[in-house]
Length: 445
Ligand code: ATP
Ligand code: MG
Image (cartoon, rainbow, N blue to C red; front, side, top):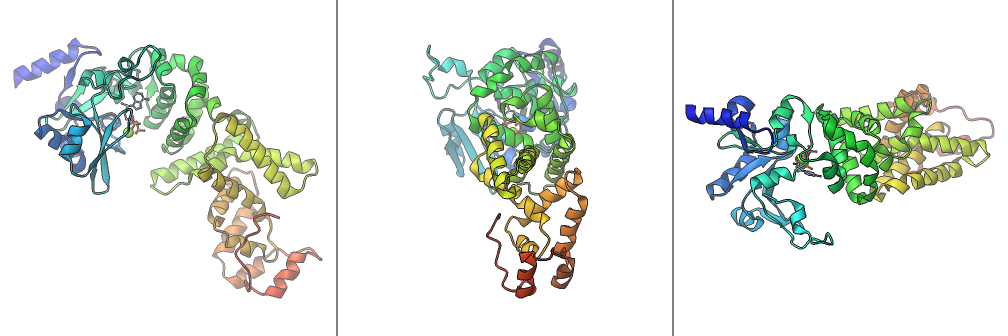
């Protein structure tokens, strides 16, 4: 026992990154019972069958930082086929890199086989000649990105295996790239975004040598497939620290690749207040476990530019609704040059925008129709956001808050008196309270 401990301490001090260092429970403090049963079942079953199995990556990092991991990944020396055979409810996924998803009720554990360095599997032309190159635990640690992401936890021994000084980096609250940072960013430019996102999300600093090449290499993001870039952008916006992430991305010059209008909007009169309020609201909702719609977040990220463009068009004499549609098209086109927003989010975003002028109309039947619109709630929340940053009159948002909660008679009394000759007022009188009002279809007129 004592010899074992001395041995561990010796190994600990002997290697500074590169060697296999075993860190005992006494030093890291993560006991087995900190892990959910489905994660333990996975490692236990693999180990009982004679394989090595560890909790790996983000979960170990988050536990050491005292945060709740959002998912649990397992690394093993068993091949995907061997893993699949061991777990009745499991399936092999992926082609280039096979993984196994093991299911326990609603929970899922991703089990990956120790992987060798990707380079070994390519030919001179850079083509992949072997689909899966398995490696040792050490190889697997080396191909991960940051030292804090390359830790292995063995729940039976309650030990952490650390090849690259990740535990020391956690203690220093620092992210350090494994290997030569510029080389690793060239291999995969998304690692630059991960550095910034994880640092902002977890409150870590980025080691100077890891940080330095980012600014120069930022343009490499242009070569990343947009689906992957978009996934990373969603992770960033839904991290619970989206404002901090965005500001840090901007500091590193990484925002040009997917948010080309940010600088312009930040320089506008209400720009910073608006974006900050929007993202901090989102962050709060995420932390409170409330649902957040991506379409809504994108609507807020780009709204100021839409508004600016719209105002200019109206000033030039274009009809309001047509001008709004034209402004939306133009802003979308600029955004698309860098990173297109997929239609499933883009359509919600545009609906929220096109509802905004309808909140200005408080005469006749119009407010009643708006209330029945399927996106009323999102549109109203967006109006409140605009009001809280000072971009529209707070009184307008308050009017809608009261109007929603009121009964029909009170609503009638709240209507803004129409100007003489306003056709809306006449229509309203004829129809009576809510009578015959169809759900709004005329999104815009
Ligand atoms: P999050 O909390 O956002 O899930 P994470 O670090 O767990 O952060 P995942 O995308 O779940 O991120 O990846 C799991 C692990 O896979 C990482 O901890 C890291 O070890 C490795 N990894 C992920 N992406 C990369 C990458 N681009 N390059 C190298 N290793 C990576
Ligand atoms: Mg993860």
